Image 1 (cartoon, rainbow, N blue to C red):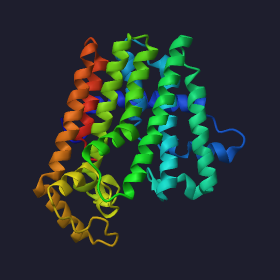
Image 2: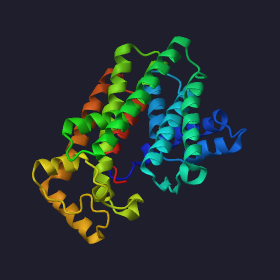
Image 3: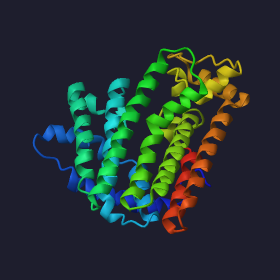
Image 4: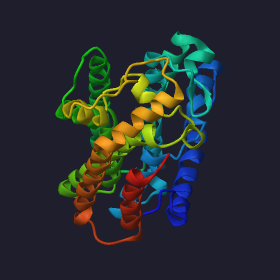
Length: 327
């Protein structure tokens, strides 16, 4: 698998992203009061790859469902994702997201909280318009609400880790499972559920999404260190100077690796590069890479419950991309 997205995979994802974008225009119009909906749409309209809603549509297709009929469900996933981004940026006091000013920087903290809350509530309203049997929609709403609770738990753990000198590997894996993995899990699981798939298939698709989502987050941790700012758009080694207790640093601490710039806000580019080299030599970065690949391989095995299809093949390719990408 190449470090950049395969053209065929890119084409398949773009098709589904376009379907989601079109549905957003219809399902989340900018109405009165205009500033509230402009703030709510700010990050949604900034684009992104729309991996989570695309995963829902692909899972639905692989389970025998109609992707176009499930566009509202895919939109609901995208709205929940953007709700979490708005609130994350408030908590982190971040300036920029997706190349745009963060919502709270333009509409203030109170406006951003309301924009995030609007996306959260709209997500369930939109999900309810999906063309599926009522009992399946109810099941999807239950799955999504449980997912939102888990995301909040994951964010709380992440914040709690900031005040602790050390975090164990199992604690970190629990945090990324809840903060990142569960929404990918819900994406794939809801796609299968709305398609009327058997419970064991829904569970397998949820496992696929959850594990590949965890791999996605671990790869993000690697990218922070190995990808230049020119490519990623973010300061290389940002997690180091922010003292983020990623799996890379957990491994380094466990092996008594000294990283001088950890938590050093005024570290120079040269100092950051020296610390990254130390983490490469110690095997800490490679350890996180291997764990990411392990998560994805386990997730891919869960798809064995599905018959072979183009959609299943695309899901497998997407899983590989999530841990091979360089930005």
